[in-house]
Amino acid sequence: MDVKNKDQNKAEADITTHEANPYEIVKGLLKEAVTALGMEENIYHILKKPMRVLELSIPLRKDDGSIENYTGYRSQHIDILGPTKGGIRFHPNVSLDEVKALSIWMSLKAAILDLPFGGGKGGVIVDPESLSERELEKLSRAYIQKLAPLIGPQKDIPAPDVNTNPEVMGWMIDEFDKMRGYNIPGMLTGKPIIIGGSEGRLAATGRGVVLMIREAAKVLGIDLSQSTAAIQGFGNVGSMAAKYLDKMGVKVVAITDAHGGIYDENGLDIPELIKLRKQGEYASDYNNASSITNEEMFGLPVDVLVPAAIENQITKDTAPSIQAKILAEAANGPTTPEGDEILEKNDIFVIPDILCNAGGVTVSYFEWVQNSMNYYWKEKEINEKLEEQMMFGFESVLAMRKEKQCRMRDAAYMVGITHIVKALNARGWINDADLGEFTGHIQNEVMDD
Ligand code: NAD
Image (cartoon, rainbow, N blue to C red):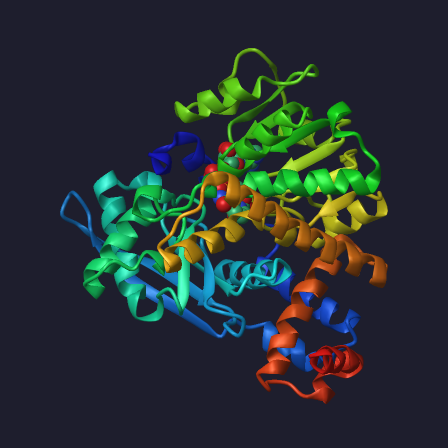
């Protein structure tokens, strides 16, 4: 199973390089966006904290008879647009602040793409590599048992994230259904297709990333069929992004993973690398290419750079060497604020994470809708709907960027906040004084009815 994939485990063990606290970063960006929209600080104070955060104690009897007590979390950011929604991460570096930040990013992603969800995120502080398969199943079941009173298809809907996958989702939903006494397929997404998962969900994030690259290339007048790309990370998202870039005629010349990197100026054999990944091999194990480090990869003269690995990779140290015209943030939080400033100065077109990797939550939404209908769409239909939704998000962010003359990241925050604020207003949480200069915008919309 994927959780046992050695590449992934090592990759996640490497998420130790946090040089910035993601919760502090997201709060800073929220505040700037609220100010830029002409809203009062009250809006920021509503959005900056998750509405509910749960800390779990999960004692687990290990195979050797000992008991280890794991700590888990769930953060539910805001539920005014719909139930909260977001993945569950198993990783030694999970922290309360990380989970809170990820839940806020989920709210913004859903809002940008006009999905009827708020943001949620969960995690357990654990190195899955240290567990047997049986222990991992017990931990997954125990986590969902503890969370059960606070989740459900109309409350909060988990999904896979780092080190969790459809198999883990299968254990979790089985545990939840047993507790409730009947099948509730919409209680989580990213589950195996046979028990209500959606076609196209596994590839959705990478597919969405490449759709966003296609749109960015149009804006910049870049012919992708004559372009090159480099990708950091060859897990679920990186490998799918590589697959669709390759299909689009982009030459993927470099890939790095947690173990090293490979480079071929004539383009790497992506189908072969994907085959190797399925066999549990690393991209960096591939023999028919030269080696490259992360640092060298960042500095390559490529058109498109795709960080699809971990947080805080584009920093004040790595950003200056980046020559790419498009930076597509497939990972969550790959760029630090200092890195961002350098990208802006160097006129690099950034597709921000809360837009770029939103394909996953979009198809999770489709999964939830299909579960509610108990009627299932074919993959073609899912992919068409995904494209429509991602295009909506891209165009909204681009329009905001033009209106405010700002970076794509700030525009994405502003689009997300605007959407949430309209719901806050419709529910009577905020008044005209809170809206500041934004008041007219809301009133016009109400009068248009
Ligand atoms: P994954 O565990 O499947 O893959 C991670 C990849 O990153 C691995 O190939 C690993 O070797 C590589 N990696 C780790 N550390 C590295 C380093 N220092 N240098 C180079 N490569 C390194 O994870 P994933 O599901 O592909 O997720 C990747 C990112 O995308 C994460 O930030 C995740 O939060 C984000 N994301 C994922 C989804 C999804 O649907 N899976 C959705 C939205 C966002």
